Image 1 (cartoon, each protein chain N blue to C red):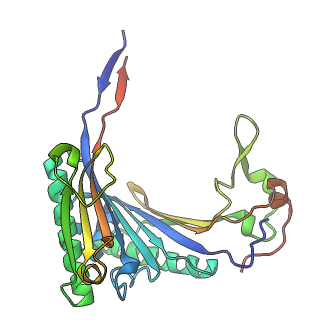
Image 2: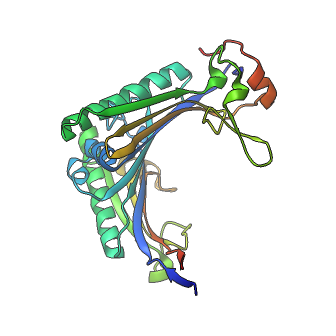
Image 3: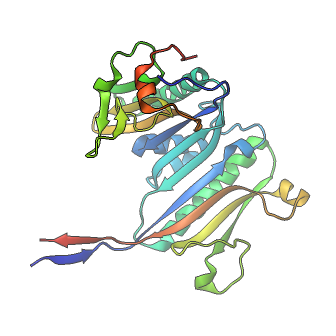
Length: 159
Length: 137
């Protein structure tokens, strides 16, 4: 488990593709968003002091976009996949069971998170349109404990 | 015998609008209240003219939205072409080898206060994407 320093600024980033990208551009310039010129949109937030606040704002924003896409597509099959980095969760069990290692035996991911600075990720997909939206809440880099310390200590630190 | 095939060169634009620098930050803030950057990548075009036209249209529409958001004629865009192709001077000094055009969105009020260096709210680059090679068996 990772213990956060007293001040650890975080921010969120969200990527939109295809229909979702056009819709987000349409929120800014309606006529351009109606065309097919847009391939991808990325929004990033200012630095925030609370990861909980960043997670809440990101989730609400993505849900707002998703609600309009459902109306537009007359599609009710919408799937959200939200994952929290177990390094920041209390009592996550044996994290060694969730690691991916490379050919050299080095840890390259923990439960799919390839960087310890990502706190949570959220993906949204619709039928025939996988990963229309992909959001992440990330901490700015700070000094990390060793990988063994991070995987072994289950102290509660999530704010 | 294997054959090498080169994919044709394509063109696209990539834009970054610093929404956090717009007073009130009202564009998209109703969905993402803490938004800072708004980055847009276009589809790939076969013809560079189509990419430039699309980039210009996008930036003009962004300017209209920004001016509407602040209730004033405050933002404008201007275009620069890579001097390697035109031999004309540009305000921009850093040009990538695959960068054809830059479209800057500027704050006219801020520019009057501080003419140099030019403070931009947005930058859109029209880029050439070199074709990669593919081996055909």
